[in-house]
Each structure stands twice: as C-alpha cells, then as structure tokens.
Length: 109
Image (cartoon, rainbow, N blue to C red):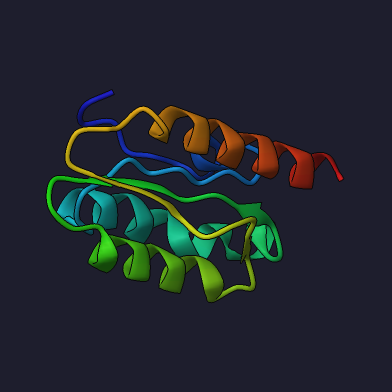
C-alpha cells in the first residue's frame, strides 16, 4: 500500500524470499531496508534468498547494493540474481519461475 510503513513481519512472510523488482537502488528501496534491517538481522541469518532485478538500462548497482545488504548477516543466494534490462524477453518469466522454485526448495529443506 502506498505510504504504508513496512514492518519485519511483512518482509519475512515470504519465508526467506527477497525479490525486489527495481531498476536502481533508489530512495524507495532504501526506505524499506533502513527501518527494518536491524530488526530482521537475527531472524533471517543464514536464510536463502533470491534476487530479481528489473532495470530500464542497468541493474549492476542495484544488484551490488542488495547483495551487500543481504550478505552481511550471512544470507546466501540460491543462484546469481535474475536481471532484466529493458523490456522482458521470452526467457525472463522462466528464469524468474526457476528462481522462485529454487528459493522454495531451499526453504523447504
């Protein structure tokens, strides 16, 4: 919801999934991480995660920023980030589905 402040439970409901759809590590994404990061550190340590980043022209900075934040308390990516630049192609939905399936399999054990 626009203007709604995210709380840790709203982030953790994904059972270890973190899948932002962002083109740049903007103020909006930072606004989500800043108030909850320290609250979630202990609860999400060593959890698997997946990262799906969509950018208009570049995704490198967003991927580096999110991976840096996620790696700090020992979270581990299930695979390299799925990145889409520009309009999504035919293979992109399958790559995103595979990412979600890998995260689900890792969380399920």
